Length: 169
Image (cartoon, rainbow, N blue to C red; front, side, top):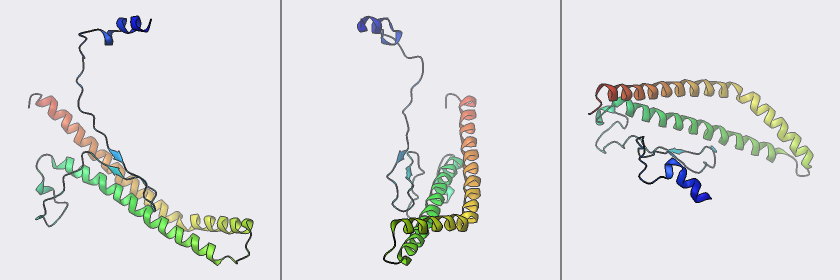
């Protein structure tokens, strides 16, 4: 019965041609989480090539051939990832140090309930202390992210228009 169903399905008929163009699939890879920032780094499959060793400034767009906006977008995307990682690595480092200081300050005979109360107070004060910093980070991250999204959209749009205007080049 299964054989009959497959034979009657158009995609399994001999000589059936595909009606669309399939290109090579691209995919970014995700690495293991960083032990401090807890973020998983993205390994882009279309990252900009590293600059030649004789170039003094590693982010100079003059060293690349082709569309410099695309290189700018790729670098901007990686800068956002770096900004995000650096913020959370620094924040978590300070958090763990402060948490450890609270735990070290507890007397030796502290019960688990007293420990949990001390940690609860610490978490509450940490969130209150970090609120302004987190808000500023969030605003900056969103600003950078939207700039990268808009630049990426512009690059894709320009590629689309270029393909329409010059279909055989």
